[in-house]
Image 1 (cartoon, rainbow, N blue to C red):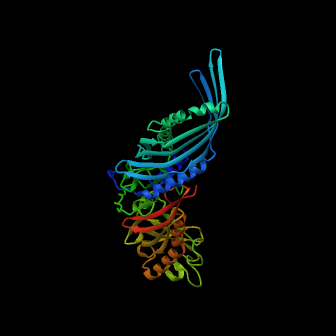
Image 2: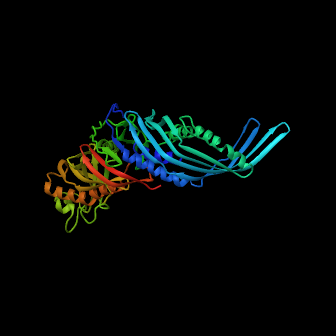
Image 3: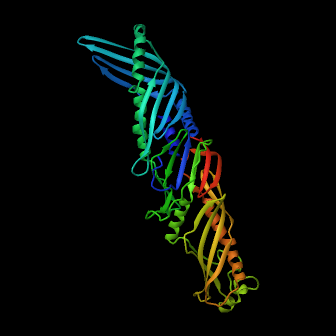
Length: 479
């Protein structure tokens, strides 16, 4: 059970036959190296967990004999060799060899027929060695885009079994222990044996339930909903499997598909790492669209945001009233408020090893007069082409502004002709002091990747590709 739980958890990190109708916003690839690591971690946990593990008591009746098998515990478990291989266009084959199990327990039986009554009790030691298991797993998707898992076949072989009885009439039972061991061996092995039945149940029932409960939506910043659902069933190649996810960010209160078309993601054949995640520009741009369409990309900048006298209309040295005399003369002893508003959705593109965000908007100027009356007097049109650096840490994507040039022009003026150089100086000051730190604060929050909390990235590399960020990483299970 522990093996299956951990294996499914790591498998879900990156669970198409390529027939999806549109390009994904997120693509992942988990390699044979990654899956074999997951299985090895699971088997380590299973080996530790099983030693001295109690097994539920067994009670039953067969004919005139009633029996109780109690206080069973596993005394030995030999960690097997295990390999994962892909079944192209189908699923995964999981094979283990060399399993060894030792079991100790107590038994008690009663025989009753008429006036004849016989009972006895004692203990036993059971050993089974050279157990090999192979199960084929089919990974698909349900109607809601969640992954599904089922077993298509299972086989089991047991090289040897032995049993020894102690106490009571043990010397009599031991005369027949070879036959008992042979019966146990036949009941364990084969596709319908005890082990395959149990393993198939764990996959088809327990595993399926876990998959059905997996969340495919993640809340972001209390306003957005990130959709990680599958677009199609997974694709299985010779040494890796790939999954294609919607990767779209919608408005939390009213999810709806955005009109943005996801660009085609790059392909590749690298399998040197355990996990690869492609994040499309589409993922970030759908969040930008949702924010813009719900009027979130606006902000009022006042003297509370800008230190010093920059936004004062009257001062002794450097302020907007001295730099642009018309403002100082028309609105003396006042403060200026700037209303920043995007006029189009900001757009992110990754190409040629760089990531840029293009944004356009209006900057409206208002004089906040001593009489508490806000007087509009100027609108500037602004264009920004922001270059950002992207890093991956703690299973999140972080961003930081490298360059933030801005170009402005006067769109409307109620105070006559203005000096472009002075306007640029003022706006650039605002960008440096306020806008850039605001953007960097957002970047510091990080963008969560679809990974479970107990799995960490190690040996991680980030590549900027056409229309996407590629994260190539190995994994470490922290338990």
